[in-house]
Length: 77
Image (cartoon, rainbow, N blue to C red; front, top):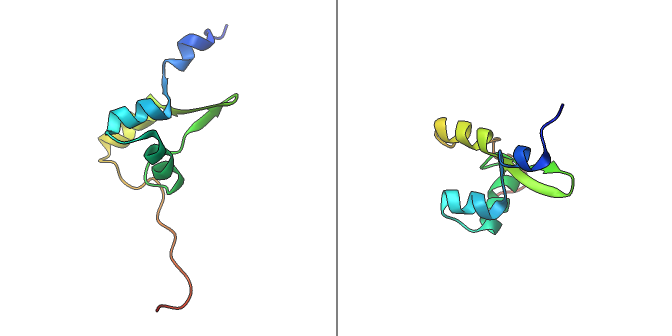
């Protein structure tokens, strides 16, 4: 039998909660995730959440870039 939704959601953080954890705004959390500088969120129904376990692992690894920054193409000015 699956666990109740409220118990399973305790393993996840909202953007404002992640912001408190890393001393930044919730908007900055979204920017960091969008740019690949932190783990991406997951969607649970219509909700956006970050896994506490994934954030703990990311912290233990020293908060490396979650994905490499894409190389820029085009002419250099």
